[in-house]
Length: 115
Length: 114
Image (cartoon, each protein chain N blue to C red):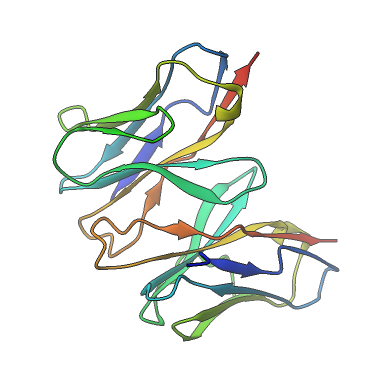
C-alpha cells in the first residue's frame, strides 16, 4: 500500500485566502485523524472520523476550520479565511479498528504558511 | 480522562552513550502504549508498541520499552545511540473510552552529539 497520502506537501497563501488540505487514508482503514503541529503547541488532534462520520471535533480551533470525509478514501480540511497563526504542519493519519490498539499511520504532512 | 506525560522535553547525549526517554500515563483501564519517532521534516512513524503479553518490547533499530503497570510508565531505552537517532520521540496511549483516539505526550527531542 502507498500509505497515507497528503496534498499539497507545501502551501503558501496570503491571509484571508481559503486553504484546502487533502488526505487519502490507507485503503480499508476506518478511522481518519487530522492533527496540527507547531513549535508552541506541539501535536494537537483537530478532528477524527470513524466510517466517514465525525466523532470528535473538539480540537478544531474555531469556525474558520472545517473538515469533511465524503467517502472512505478521501478527506479535506478547509480553513476559511486563513490567518498567519494557522501556519503549521498539518498531518493526516488513519487506523483500522480491527487492529487491536488502534495503531495510527501518519502521512508526510502539509506545511502551511500564511503570510 | 487519559493523559500521557513525557518528563523531558529535550535530551542531549553523546554518540554511543545509553539513553532513556521517560513516559508516564494515567489510566484506570487497560491501555495500549506506543512510541512514535519523527525525523526532521517527516511524519510520525511507529517505533514500537505494547498491546499485551511480554512487558518488554523491542524495535528493529535497537530501542526497547518496558511496560510497568505499577508505576504506570513506558520508558524508552537504547543502550548505545547513533547520530541517526536524532529525532523527536512521542509516547502515546489508547484504550478505555478513547474510542480509537491516541493520547500523545508532548514529545522529547533527542539530540545525539558526535
